[in-house]
Length: 190
Image 1 (cartoon, helix red, strand yellow):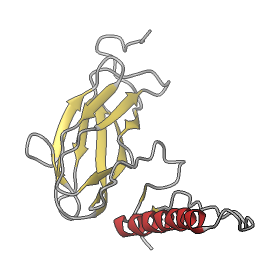
Image 2 (cartoon, rainbow, N blue to C red):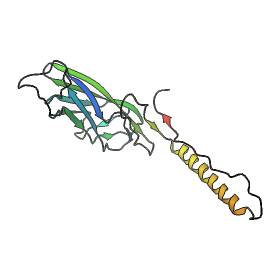
Image 3 (cartoon, rainbow, N blue to C red):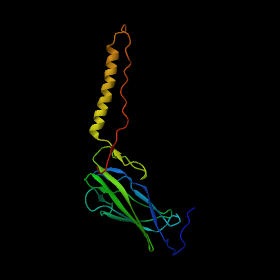
Image 4 (cartoon, rainbow, N blue to C red):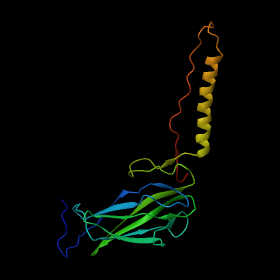
């Protein structure tokens, strides 16, 4: 059950927590099919209804526009303290950037940022659930191509050896293809 502020009562302190969209990697030039959702709470952790939440994209570099065509969008928190924005149209500049988020109700203000990444890579679905997890990792398309070719080549070599061997020949050591774990590339400043 949500406890709401008394009529006319405003919180002394606001807190913002990004609950969806942090660390998401999108394709450059694409449209965000998932958005950014935040929850605004007061000093006791109760959801704050009716707070104004501003989402701001950078003016230059990797960025985009909101569905209203501007770099700023304002939403109002629902009874659960949540506010969302989605459908951003991304520009074609690859790199990381931050969506600046500000919440206000009465005299109370709070701010945070939501890191996002624009990528040319086809695998732009990698996300980071919380700030405590490692950064978003994307794979280079060439790297995946070489790994796939190497694994396929090893499989063909094993099959050819098995077919080429005579039934009277003693069995040699069993060749097993090399297994490669999920390669990762950390995106960020070097």
